Amino acid sequence: MLFPPGPKLSQTEQLQYLRRDPLRFFEQCHADFGAVFTLELGTFGNQEVETEANGKWVFITRPEDVETLFRAGPDIALAGTANKILFGSRTQQGGIIRLDGRPHMDIRRVYQPIFNGARMRAYTQPIMATIRRHARLWSRSRAFPFLPEMQRITIDVIAKTILGFDESELFDMLCSRLMCLENAAIQGSDRHMAERELSRITFEHIARRRHQDLSGREDVFSLLCQLTKPDGHPLSDRELHDELVTLLKAGFGTTSNALAWLFACILENPRVQERVQEEALAAVGTREPVNCRFDNMPYTEAVIQETLRLCPSVAGFTGVRYLSEAIRLGGYTIPAHTVVAVATHILHRNEKVYTDPLSFKPERFLGAKPSAWRWAPFGGGNRMCVGRAFANHEMKVVLATVFSDMAVTLDRPVGGSEVQGFFCSPKERGPYVQIRDRDHDA
Image (cartoon, rainbow, N blue to C red; front, side, top):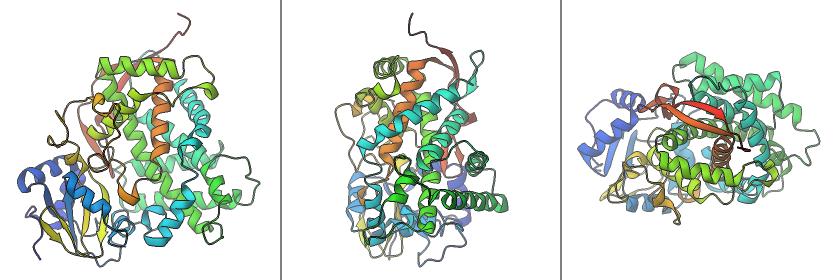
């Protein structure tokens, strides 16, 4: 069966190009082979994965093909199977991203009341408290890189709002292991050791907290412990572990990198910064956290959407699916056992989809909900990221709190992106910023 064209390179060479500079590799493949192309990626280097996959990965870049993929039945386009290949792990058997069919639907129903929009208000105060605690330690006299600060805040927020961790030695160990896994330079046995330690810490936390009185607690771990699956049973320790580790890994790198890109884009555009600051002061100002108004920040929300369009925090693709039977994409019949993914880096820069696509224009999202087929930073279809509401709320609260409390200026612009594992972050841990405290009485 004829596949879309692709580079005449070995699987090893293609994996090296994709890991070294995924955005440029996608751009070159798109220029050379068109809107749909094939890469030889095998099991993405995950040797422990057992699969019937044929080793070919087809990438799509047009909205009509994205719609076809995301509308395909969950028994035809399997996201869980694809994610097992992409994120092969020695410590996880499941987790929502690795499940297909009924098991995925069942756990997704468990998550829905936890991550719905109304519940976001319960997370606002701990997020704001975390931001302000870290911000007190930031230098007021010299410029410093913002990515590490966004990583620390994101880890802290996840540990407290997702796992329900209190300050402890175990909390410190959790944070250090997550930072270790974010470092692309850590590979091989060192990376596997960090994975095992993260797994051990999570199991230890479950054992210590599982049988405590968790009523009245709002962290995700406590809520998951109290909910039951459609069959009437609670989540097992293994299911809890796999879900928590999934949330930790998925929520850390994506959100921390997105926050760094957000500050870079805002600070590089004075007109944008002025409007974001106006909304931040209106939302926060001198109010107590419980009285802050994060539900009326349309321009900031548009800035977040435009940043996620133009500055991918993941390595240039989302929406990964494994085909159980052939489907038609881009004029080709893609056979079963093929992995298909959306090359969002190309889709989001398609001049037929976005006018002046390389310019940062939040206005393009004002008053209009992003199309599910044209904007896919959170994937799409029945596998849209379950934590997207939490991530968006966290980003909005971070922006509003920082710009309300502090005057932030750009010390030097970001000079492009670099790969950190599966994620893309600003170069040199940027942007580099200078801050001073805002005097609300002035």
